[in-house]
Image 1 (spheres, rainbow, N blue to C red):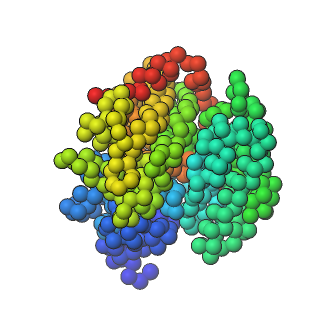
Image 2: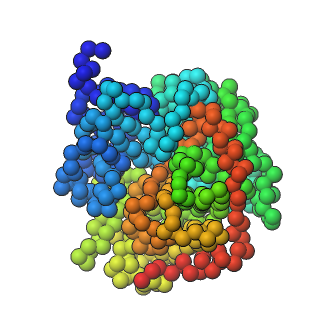
Image 3: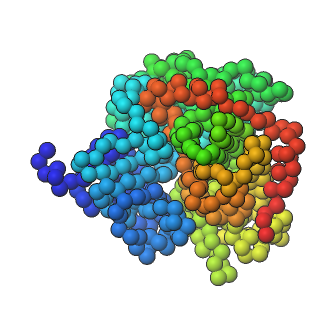
Length: 519
């Protein structure tokens, strides 16, 4: 190809692009994936964070100020500041249309070999896709639904929205009760319509017809898949909490009432009643299964699911955290979209804020909540018991109330107690872990330092904490792109041991202990 000698070959999710040296990485993201950056790539919003390796230029003072020392030390950069260089690589974590998208990009010289994803150390030859031309992956979260469209082996876009089932209850238990009270058909209709809307919007943006989608992989926790299928969830509502369906099955778009009626639809296998297919696919998405020494993964969401790989054991649990870390259920909580405070810092006696898209804040999202609580502890306005004398405003009417602090305490205590329980049961010290993988949408922008400050994570070297974004969706995409992962997912789910935290004395002790903030 004439002129290629002066170009760099980029791989975007396995698809090569020949581009000129020095081209802005953010421009490639936009053109390749249609990602909507709040500031349009004008180096103003600080949302295009990527893990970067290679010969990129040192960060400017502006980029340093926007990212902060902690993120820079983790290898995080802003795509709108980076110019493409030979032998460089980036792994980007982005929000797109209110959902989390995991995008893997690699750059290499012309002699380079097409790389795999950053979390996958294996080299797989000639993967066999589950679709010929159009496929889709779906993650049904308790709070949000994320969908990605794929064309000819390459991503064609990602979108998401609030899970509309929230009108029948913010958490899994409330929705199970609603289903048992005669709302099963309504729950199924709400989620099916949401998936169809997202598929149609994605297809339209890509110049395609949603009806032509051939294969869809749908992951989610066990209850979400029950609701999707219209199954009776009574077995999930009472002891011994043993699911009568763990999925790992194929159905069709027509049977589910989706817009892509002729599509084959695969529901990956769940691990147990409250550790679902989303954790099975998240294990694939993070690559944690191949780590040595042992590692832990935590999905920080409405349901906090935790996985520990140690020697020959794969052990997991689930704990009800509530939606506080996803910006829901709080006095000023909102999603991580334009107008949300996503970062807060107590500095020289006043609050320093960052608002997505700039301007006057309309609310605060999960990453901002963690920063805000850490800042309140730093300022002395909040003590280690969680006592807040009066509601605090960060800007105008946007801030945190005493009730909000209580919700954060409950959420962080549930997640931390689950992590500590698994470590205790296996006799592993947190310092022995090779990696701590943090999955979940809001975790992409969370300050690890502030998460540690409020006590969300056990004591572990900060350099060993890896933020993974929506790993559940990434794992579903792996199954979509390589049918060998379908078998691997089922084997992982069958192998996993589930710890029931209900009535577990150690968990209860940890739960009460972790309600406190560390001094």
